[in-house]
Image (cartoon, rainbow, N blue to C red; front, top):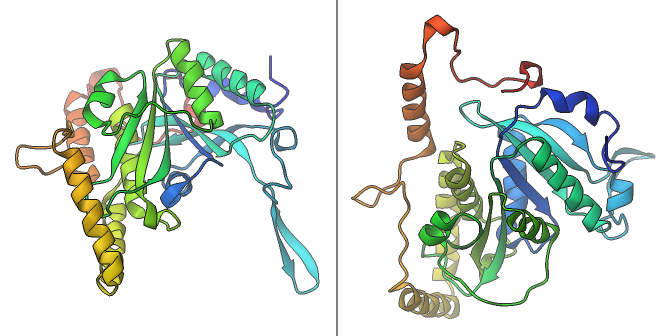
Length: 318
């Protein structure tokens, strides 16, 4: 039975979705330091070809006066009305591997109904793992690796990647509550809280996107191209370094943050499972090339198996 907060055509499309896919949750609305979530959402929509499976009813879930929709005034008339949307989509990574994407603004209303609906979808699609990211401003320097707090059911990722493990009360988001409910039900779920330099919290910080993608790949096995993000991050960092070098007060602030960061990290160094002995990490393209070679070697032409591609909805369940 179709939930009334879904779009009407959902029932006609759900049978075409493969079961057992990972779910990436990219809900905007919580504190988004470094524009981490908005960058992730833009990246996934630009590079993974999402196809809408269902749309939630914005009239029921969103407060238009809190997030006023954008409309364009063109000389003497109004055009391009663009209300916010909240949708579940089928997308594909760089190797054509499918995944689910929950994208849009978190609901202002009916959280319990919305979360119950997402839990129903997780059950119906037999989601393998649910992963989400968000970002908070912290007194950390941009000259050190971006660190994370990892939560959820993946002890391996918590042990390998979670640098800061506080016990604190905080204002919950819909994604927080979704993680809480999934974990309580024994479902696999991972949350990555990125710790963003507080003085860069209001920027579009490329390293935040890179860290989000890195965490998602580690949690799901999906592959995303990160070389363009790395290059954008290098250019961004160079600009930040140049601006700080021109201001003695800012330079002293960064040095102080470096000292505190290094002291804190002295006994808390975590190692990426992808890191080689010389300390380097392969690019997404290198990983993708190795995976393509591996899959090609395993392909059996006699049974009709096809090479990895980007199947559409019409390919049916896996």
